[in-house]
Image 1 (tube, rainbow, N blue to C red):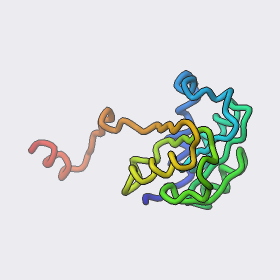
Image 2 (spheres, rainbow, N blue to C red; image 1 turned 180 degrees about the vertical axis):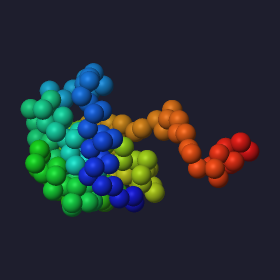
Image 3 (cartoon, one colour; image 1 turned 180 degrees about the horizontal axis):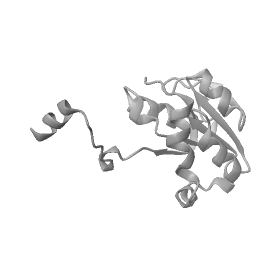
Length: 146
């Protein structure tokens, strides 16, 4: 599992929901009783979910340092995405943002999300194929030309 700093997560996740929350509409947040943000990191998505849902939102992450920040917005629990510390059918919605791409076995995490959800599992993952990175490192330039 990759580890991330608070500054990295706040730069990459914080602005994702600032412009529009239209993507959240299919989640029917206004009808949810218990929502889990798996791999919540510093809690940017958890905070948005809590603002949009009358139900309880819980953040879960393996990194206790990141959870200390998320705890400012929602209740948090330390846990691994492939071994969540919740009984079956605890939540009616499980979400994750930019988590699966960082796990060695994303399918195992999805199975675990389904185990703890009575209804819906929703994930948001980056489209890194759409990102272009220019490098000033000569070795990378040579490899790119091959």
